[in-house]
Length: 117
Length: 114
Image 1 (tube, chains in turn cyan, green):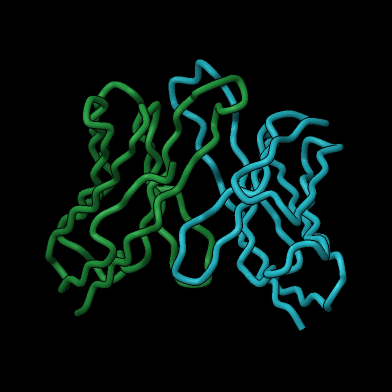
Image 2 (spheres, rainbow over the protein chains, first blue to last red):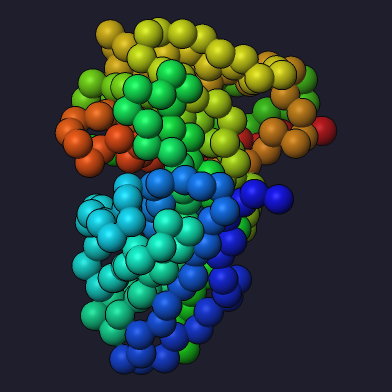
């Protein structure tokens, strides 16, 4: 059963603590993405990766870090430098075919809700 | 630059129709439409590629006007299950690292009442 798995579903962060959100996919997609969603807002891109061992900053990368050591996995670390981390975090994956006639559809995981203690 | 969606919110009675618009200030390669229920992940509805095509999915269809850099989502004979927030995501293909990368609008809240 192919899909994207995010864990944990809920996460609490203490002051000054780094926390890591997990994202795993078995869709054989090359590209993976992390988004942040605040209440009543759209999705803002944090980081994305189109191939293993490479990733690019999105629109709001400050205070976050990622790694892409395996095709299936794209963990996101929310560092202590992120002063307002409370949000709903969504991971997505897609193909990256430049000549794909069907386009590169992004599929989302169920999300992680991060709160500050 | 974030695409602009309009309207911000729509309230319908079951069976009524609605149109949601998505406009971009940059040339579009594709437009993706998603629906998100409260507290859940966005669910893909449809994708429209450069070429001005119109696509349909049950009673939900969409158009893509490449010249105007706009897309519209049409919901006909709405059902209670259509309630949620609708997002458009735009792909611009400006360079080597932009393939598949989407920029999302702020969302349109659709509420369908019995």
